[in-house]
Length: 96
Image (tube, rainbow, N blue to C red; front, side, top):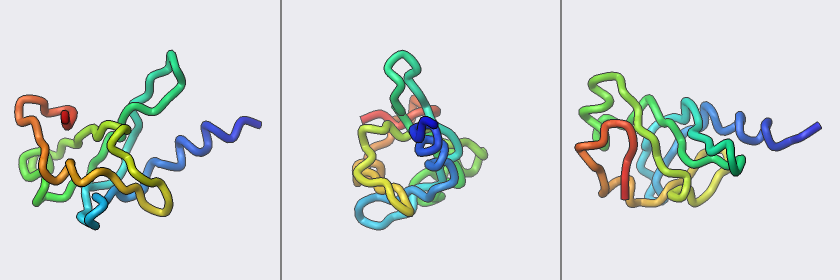
């Protein structure tokens, strides 16, 4: 049995924090590139209203690029850049 799909689905429901310990949100879904069978982003909901006031107020989520992920364990740690960088013109994805 291939363990890879189980690992990928196990990311759903995990809390996401920055390396500084700031809560970002909770993984609701994954953005995948099926051609190369890789995760390209984390669809995060239940957002920290201090970081994402507009999105949280409207019930939206954000997609954090997977390249920002620094560690995966009981929680997911992402680069601190998520605290500082936000593209207000892109409501769907945080862009560096």
